[in-house]
Image (cartoon, rainbow, N blue to C red; front, side, top):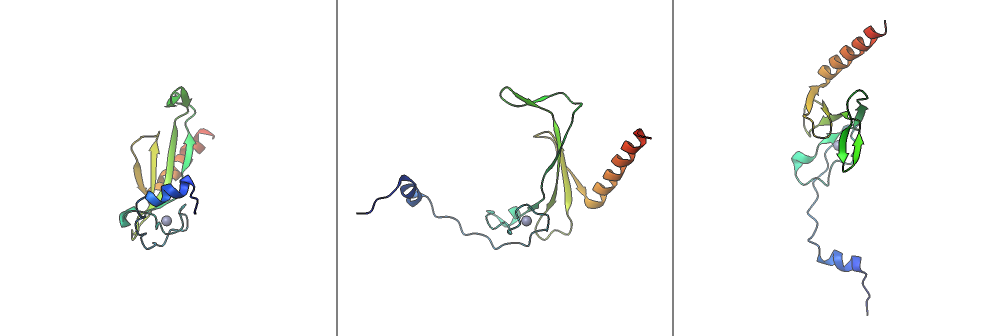
Length: 123
Ligand SMILES: [Zn+2]
């Protein structure tokens, strides 16, 4: 007699796992780093960097859950599709904000402009 646990019984009734995709070469900054073999489609094998969040301290609080309020944030991360010739910096505000996509040179120009603006306020 063989005893089975509920987890074993459940595993036997699940559909077979789909075949995994061959790995892509990840960018050195990719948080996945294993070639995205668990993606369902080749176009989903996308390298994504770690998300940086900047809290907007002067903005009103926003509701993030029932009875939960937090400061709004700006998010940015690196993104590169397999075979793409360039990496982009993706930036959006809030949880559902429209994403703005910058080429790396554009992101650098924006960063320098922000830094100059900040430095001009500090004399
Ligand atoms: Zn990757």
